[in-house]
Length: 244
Ligand SMILES: [Zn+2]
Image (cartoon, rainbow, N blue to C red; front, side, top):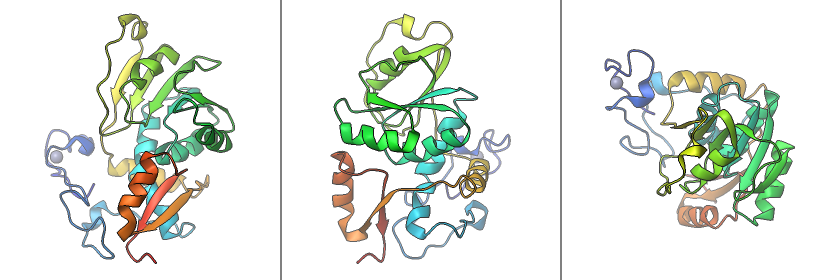
């Protein structure tokens, strides 16, 4: 988020992530893929020296969205994570730091992603078609797959929350009301506030968050996207403007 109006009904009470005038770097503001960029300093964060540029890159956007998605889960103890990619591998480390139990769900049969998830979470990992050994208090969905919504509701205990962390998702199929019944909550997360950024970036070096990155030169951006789509990457892909 590179700019918000500061005066609307969302900005004033600190919900600037919902500002209808908000502008985003790399979207409405130039500079997302450049070596240098002009930025409004009110929307910049200090990066701890502990992180190299490539290690720090996933903290922004994906790490922050993962963090905000997790915050929407409140104090849930058993957390399920659907789609174990860049956002999940960061949110999972915050979960462990906070002493929560983690259950990771990947594409059915993706044993490599499940092994990666187990290594990061220290907990159960399985396919998204499986029911975890214990009912979840909250489910975080990072994969853009609408079918995961009823699957996650099914795995969630009464009173639990299912949080969709993505910007886009395929259509959510119809599901029986009993999956939502018993005060389960279904919600999405949009963008982030600067308060989220300050809180997360203050927390990250202390845990410390370790980001697993695969770097690509900017010219290989399409290759990076293909690797992500085909599930060939663990953790985050990072584009280097100065890449080799
Ligand atoms: Zn506003």
